[in-house]
Image (cartoon, rainbow, N blue to C red; front, side):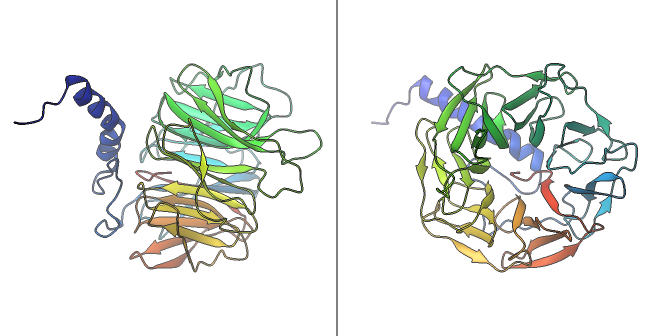
Length: 364
C-alpha cells in the first residue's frame, strides 16, 4: 500500500521552496535552490555584475562597478553626486538597481550606476546616527540598519520609515542585515553602551510587523566574544552570525528559536562577514584571512589571500567556486576565487579601503 501524503504537508513544502525558487530565476545559469549551488559542478560565470563601496577620496565616496565578474572595475559618481563620506554598505538587486549606505545617507541607482539618487530619510532620525548595512530584496523592498538602534525599511523604494520594534529589544549598534523575504529579516550587532563600544551579542528578527530580540547577551570589554558583526540568511530557518575575536560562528536551524555556537573560533581577532551558499558550505572573512567549511562548520579550511594581515573584511559569494573578498585597510584590493582552488588579486581604481561587496545573483 502506498503511503498517503496529507494536503497540508504538500502545501507546507511548496511554501518553503518559494523563496528559493524565486532566487533561482534571478540568478540564471547557477541554479541556486534551497540546497544552494553544487560546489563540485557550478562554474563562475564571466559576466557577473557587482558593486563595491569604501572610503571617500577626491571629494566623494567610493562606488565601484564590474560587469565581468571582478576582472575590471570602474568608479562611479562624482563630486556633488556622491557625498564626501565613507560608504560601508551595498546591496545589488540586478544590473540596473543597487542600494548603497554610509554615514547618514542612502543612495539608489536605477540605471546601473550612471546616476545615484540620495533618499529622503524620516524626520525623526536621531541626530548622531550612522548607517552601516543594507539589504535589498528587490527594487522596492529594502532594509537598512545602523547605530544607535537604527532599523529602517521601504516597500516602495522611495518612502523610508523607522520600523516598529519590541520594547524588549535593547538599544543595539547594528552592523549587518540580511533577509530571504520581507517576513524573514535578521539584523546583528552589539548591545549599545555609553561606556563600552562592545557590550554583548545582539540578534534581532523582523517578521513583517515588528523587530523582536532573539539573542541578547551582556559582556564586559574583557570578553572578546562580545559583538556580532556579520549575518547570512540561507532560508527562513537557517541563519549564520559571526563576530568578535575568539567568538565561534553561531547558527540557527529553527528560524532563531535557538542559536548555537558551531565549531571553534576562526580567529583571535574579529570575524567580519559570513556567506552561506548551502547548508554545509559557508564562507567567512576574518582579520586573519578567509575560511570555508564544507561540513556545516565542524571543520574549516583557511585559504591564502592577499588580504591576510590587512583584514579580510568584505565578502560576496555566488557558490563554492565563485566568491570575492576585499581588504579593510588601504590601499583597496579585491580578490577573486578562481577555479575553486585559489585567489587572484584584482586591482581597483582606489587607494582607499573597500568595506562591502555585492554581486547580482550572489548570496550577499
